[in-house]
Length: 132
Image 1 (cartoon, rainbow, N blue to C red):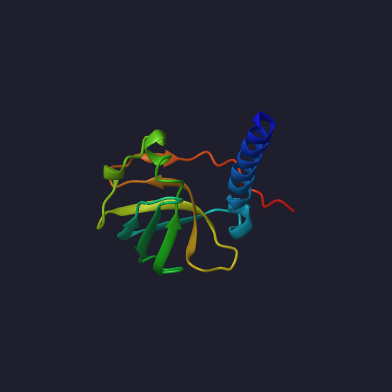
Image 2 (image 1 turned 90 degrees about the vertical axis):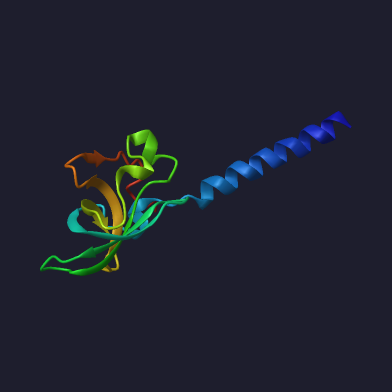
């Protein structure tokens, strides 16, 4: 009976960890991590939820003006990096350095963000390359 319970427990642990590992995605799979782009815009919407925070920006730049979707790290990680929920709000103008989506759409993953008050937050991203 003890051996059977141990086997069930081990199978459960392996299943939980394997599901989590395969569900994670690398930034380089969807974004061009070889170059960065800088986008400045006014925050139209903030989706502060897991698995990633998304900011909707209205960029008025001469090149690629329009609505951008900027993906950031997980909501629980940003405060650890010094960037709390209260650091930026709808209506603020921010500057984002990002890796743009490979499909050329106006979206990308944040490398760094500069807020209204001049503070800049750079993020360490481990999984930049898409595994083959």
